Image (cartoon, rainbow, N blue to C red; front, side, top):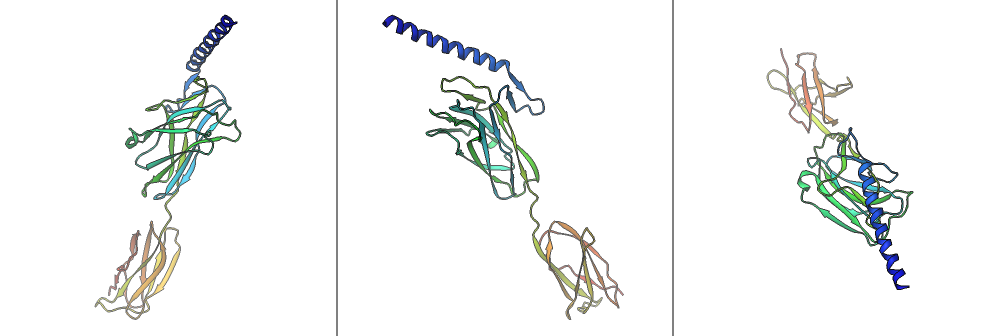
Length: 273
């Protein structure tokens, strides 16, 4: 009986070793580099680890989720999160809500200044089988105040931490790795005040002159000068060019084209004889 038990254990180890070797060989054979995005590695199979696309606002924070379309036999995942450090900074990584109980998160931040952080999530328990997708980690970034609007990719790459998903036996599992995008919105226009003074050629304030503020869509607003020649437009949107004209029964005025970026209080006009 003892000899039979020993023989059985030896054969079980041999069988596991054979399965690992064959699985690893199949993994190598089935590896495909996507030509459209060479930083994305695809393995034939239904399991997917993906960056979930989201939206962000310049000058604020954004949280990006990385999720696993799990088949219920995964206990560990490693990958490198690649991002634009000029746009996203101060990344904070947290275990996701779908990580197995007792999972540990390890980080490699040696290349964080270059926009790469290595991730290892390891557990003794398996991920719950999807659906829904299981959230592996989240990462929260500060978005640069001057970040350009539009989509910016967040990718999963193999350096410094390699791409892998493994089973309780340590076998590498076929997985597709997919990038996502953070779409940065146009900065919200601020409302400011634009004003100034209209004077005669001799420098006296001109009363009841009509000042027109015309935007790029030819939408016009009109203000009438006070007894001191003062005028004001409230709630003017920044980030646009405006044409300002002045009309009077007695004097002529040259129009001005200005780019409004902040409050303006000295947009003055002097009458021409």
